[in-house]
Image (tube, rainbow, N blue to C red; front, top):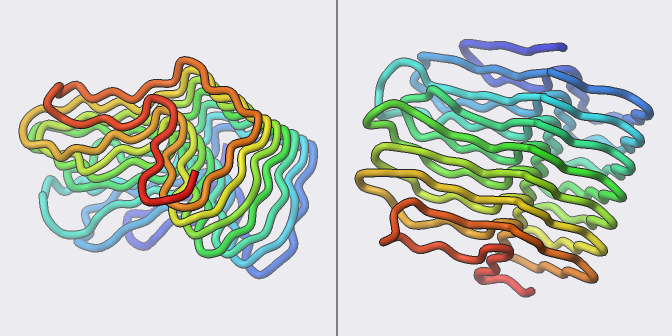
Length: 275
């Protein structure tokens, strides 16, 4: 159980930070690693990768378990203006990296900004990919991963993207992967700008899902007061090219506690892309 912690400056990789290198990981366990950024600084704040942060790196991860890893970024000064806390990838954050990930388990990982008094953005309960990463997932299991936001009265919450995987400006393939019981969950007193995709989100990305199973994934919003609409896709939310071949979608759910707000796609929401 490794940790990186800061009260000023960004946080990268709870267990491993790797840059401009080649990385091979096999038959390994990453359990209970964390990146925590709790600050009173008036600034834009970010945490990257509860276990691993990879930038401009090529490699492979095979037969590994990533369990109960956490990435958390919070403003705790009680102010409602200024910097926006951002958390990327409860287990792994890839930036400009090319990887093959196969026969891996991602269980119970979390991306959160819990306790923050200001807007918070969270990306990828298990994995976040950004900046032209190329990632291929083969026979991986994503179970009980969570992206979560909750704050005090007059708390403003921003956006949650992908309880298992968030893909942004990246490409790759999910082949024979299973997504079970992953959840994007948000609650706020005043404002929710958007909550997207219980299991996986494809944003600014071209991705294929082949022979994948999506079971009992959810995107859930509980809010009161002045709220913005936006609960999209219990399993997948798509804004670019998405192809699903021989996939199953069973008992996935998108839910908003305010009946006057819009909810889009219990299993899949495709908005402005190609499905």
